[in-house]
Image (cartoon, rainbow, N blue to C red; front, side):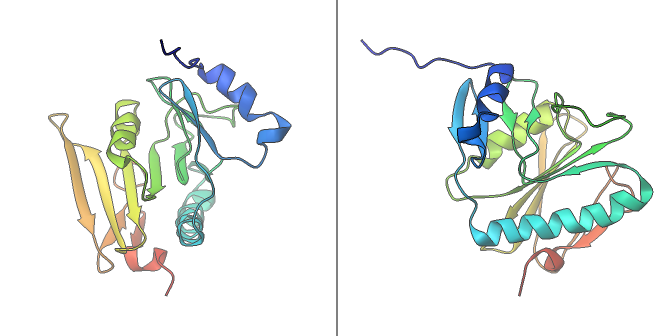
Length: 184
C-alpha cells in the first residue's frame, strides 16, 4: 500500500523555503507538494531580466507598485505558491511591501520551460486575481498574452517579434515591443 506524501500549507512551505540549505533553490508549492524548479536556462533568465528592466523603468518613476523577480513568491487562492519570472503588483492593492505576498500579482510573466504546464499556471494566476499573464517562449521568440474575457473564458493572443505588448488596464500606457525582450 502506497503512503501519500505529506501535503504542505503555504505557511509551512515558506518556513522550509527559508531554511539555509534552501537559500539558493527555487521552490514552488504546487498542490501541497514542494517542487524544486531547478536553475533557469541562461536565455530564460536573460529574457526575464530584460522584461523586469522595462517594467521597472515604467513603474518606478510613476510610483505604481512593486516589480518582483523570480524569487517573489505569491500565494494563490488555491494555496499554491508560484514564482513568476517577473511579477507586478500595484500599490492600489498593496500599499506597503509585505513579509510575504499573500495575494496574486496583477501581472505575471512566465518564461516558459520545456517541462512546465503553463496553462495550469495561467489558470491558477487568473483564478486568483491576476489580470494579465505573459507566457514568453524563448525559442520561438513569441509571447502569448492571457486574460479572461468578459464571459470568463480564457483568451490568448500570440505576438511575434513584430508585435507589441500592452499593459492594458494593469499598466495603462505601458508598451513593449516584443523584439526588445529577446537578445540578438
